Image 1 (tube, rainbow, N blue to C red):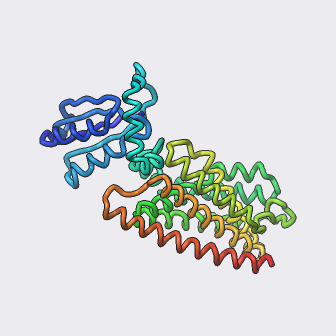
Image 2 (cartoon, rainbow, N blue to C red; image 1 turned 90 degrees about the vertical axis):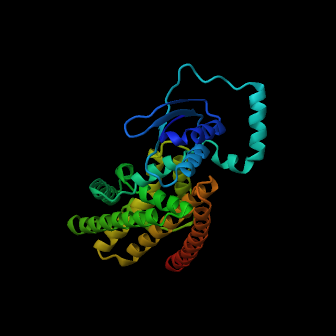
Length: 340
């Protein structure tokens, strides 16, 4: 369930009540406003519901500043909501047939606003992001060099790579150029900082070129693309359905962190052939992860609220998909020539 609180001016009361009743919430109440607001409504909706209500409220209030909507998850409700009657179940089933196209994709999905806030927070380029990137790079470099898979996994746990990847994919689905640019800057900064520190480590400590963990990051095959595609899809699906993405973040780091560090280490010791192979592996993984995450967001029906924005977003999705697929084809050709 979700708890939605709406603060608004008194002259919008009738319209707000109509929007709430149309959403068929579990329950709701109307009260006097607090602080600068004249009226307040508190609504409880079922999991997977509420998006249309939020859209209707945003359309109602427009660009005015005298309103606010707050959405909170509900951990428990006492007494428990009553089970729907047979008549209500039949009505819901009939309504589901009418709106099957939207219902199939939106079922059990996070609200667009919740999803955006989660993803946006993960792509902030701040000191925490930089420090975590540096620490994960150092740990990964040591693990690869000492052929210790446990240390490599530990590096993936703290690597903050999931945020910018998901942010870019979501920005594409929404046609949000601002978020797309922020995600790009954060991703490039993270990869650049990590690459620099890994290359510096290669100049300080002796590099074990017989390490299986290190050398395996130069091997490019179909299973690599499958892993990256699965990582991006799992990350986007876990985020869009409101599930924990902590472990999925490790899965994304598997595809991105080790080849990035390996490429920098090889470059640091002057092994340009293996450095190029690892860099190519990283590029393929990035493209596959972004493509699959973008597909999941589109498949789940993540799109802007307004019709005009939806048209722009649809165009952005097609353009980005075409560009990423073209880039993937080029990278695959390069990989086949390099390994052939």
